[in-house]
Image (tube, rainbow, N blue to C red; front, side, top):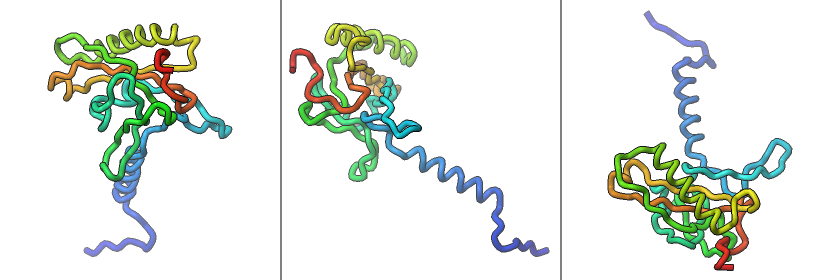
Length: 176
């Protein structure tokens, strides 16, 4: 028995494969930048960065030292992956590392690590900028991943940024 299809009809499995392919491509879209996203009325919406915005696995982040500035993560065709790049702070950088804290030894516990990182980086942020609510700046931690933790990485990077876009110079109070 020969089965024929009418011209212009598609098999449901083929539609599903196409849809899954498009969803996979959508996952490759680079993360939003520090300038925020566009709201429904075309206005800029401040960007909120969290502990998963950049991780120890993001290429380039392990080269950033305390006090240095860097870009938001973006896909690099040259590197064929998402990267962050060192940027001189006077060139309107998106992020600035303001310190590192060493997490306690122990088994990998993402919830405990997250709580430690937010609490520790928060103390440093409050110390530098006198409490986050009065400041136009915000912070986020860069956490070790399960893989880097297994390799002995216990360092959490504390990062300051402006939700409204790139910062004009160093955000560190003593560096101004």
